[in-house]
Image (cartoon, rainbow, N blue to C red; front, side):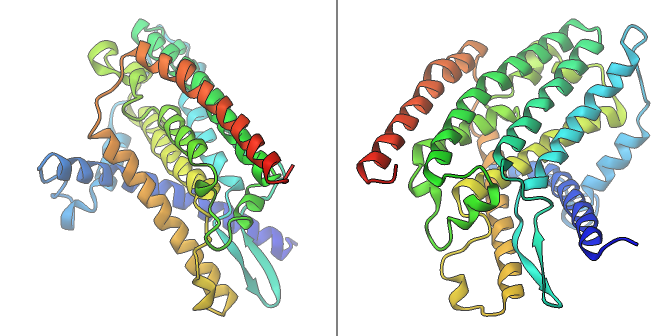
Length: 343
C-alpha cells in the first residue's frame, strides 16, 4: 500500500513533467507569434482559432516523418544522444519550488518534488550532463558538419558554465545556502536577490542564453555554415527530442532565473490581501509562472532582435569578459559582506 506522501509525490512528478512538455510545446507557437509580431507578419493562423492547434499539428508531422538512421552512423549512440538531451532537460525541474505548498487535512504538501540541500549543485550537474547528449549525437552521426556543430556546442556550454557557476558563488555567499527552497524563502516580500546581485544576475542571464543555444549564441546550429549543426542527420521524433529539449531548457532556465533572483513564488504585499494559505500558495504559483513566461518572452524577443556572434566573439565574451566579471562580483560581494559585518 503506497503512502499518501508517495502518491502525492508521484502525482507531482507527472504534473511537472506534463507542464514542462506543454509549456515547451506552446513555446514553439509563442516563438512564431512573437517573431511574426516583431517582423510585421501574421504567424500561424490556420490550425485552429488563431493557430492555437499548430503545436499539435507540428507534433503529428514529426511523428509521421520517415525515421532515418544513417547506415554509417553508430546506431545505439545515435539514438542515445537525443534521449540524454531530453532526459536531462526534464530532470532539472525536480528541485524547483513551484509554490509554498498546500495544506490538505492538516498535512502540508510541498509544491516541490524534492528539496535537497544542494539543489543548485544538482541543477548544474544535470545541465552539465546535457552536453553529452549533444556531443554523442554529433559524433554518432558520422557527419563532419554534425561533429563540428557538436564540438561548437560542447565548448560553448562548458565555457559559459564556468561564468555561470562563478556568478552563483556570489549568490551562495550572500544567502548562505545551496537549497533552492531556502533561497526562495529568503526573498519573501520585496527582498529579491536581483537588487543585491545585479551584476550576478546579468552574467547568469547571458550564460543562460549560451547554455540553451539561443540567439545570439546559436552557433552550434548555424545553418549558413554547418547545414543544421549537431542534429543535421536527425529526422522524425529524434530531431523533435533535440528541438523539444531546447525549449524545455529555456523554460527551466526561466524558472531558475525567476527562482534565484526574482523571489520565485514570492510576491510583495500578496499576504496582506489573501489570508487562506492554500489560496496564497496558488496565487504565488500563478505569479511565479507569470515571471517564467516573461523571461521566455525575453528569450524570444532577443532572438528576433540581435544577430548571432562570430565564434571568436562568443569565446572572447565567455573567457575574457564574463569570467573576469564573475570573479570581480565575488570579490565585491565578499567586500560588502565584510563591510556590513555579515561575514
